Image (cartoon, rainbow, N blue to C red):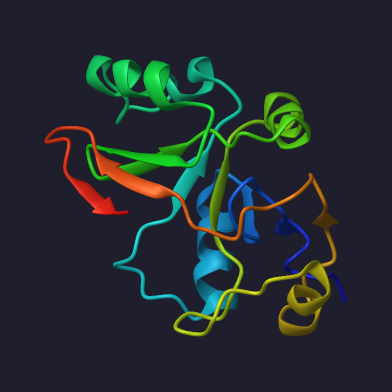
Amino acid sequence: MANKYNKLFISTTDTILGIGGKVSKEVKDLIYEIKGRDRLKKLIILVGSIEQARKFKEWNTQAEEFAKKWWPGAYTLVVNDQGFRMPKQEKFLEYLKKNGPVYFTSCNISGAPVCETIEAAKEVFPEVTNVYNFGEMSGKASQVIRVETGEILRN
């Protein structure tokens, strides 16, 4: 029997360990399912470049200005109710440029602590067999900024 979670992956980022997959409805549904995540909590999209972000209908010129100032880095920009981030991790950026944007979220069962190591993540999510170590993590989640108002939603 095929592993229905083979479109997901676990990986390091410049901030914390995460779980995600290529932007699609199927991947989005799988992430919500495997994490037991409330569907009212949106997933962010990781991009490898501002050019990739421009392809999403939510993106606008105001987001572009924020991105030019803060990316790549630990800043999630919420624009038109969709979060975007470009990680500051060269190997992950190469992956994103080659494979395209991904839905991404912290690597944990919803409401539980975030997995701190790849080994812990493999125990929590044994169904996810695609695992990447793109480099060191800071251990601190990204700052979240609402572009339209400049409000900091998470510091």
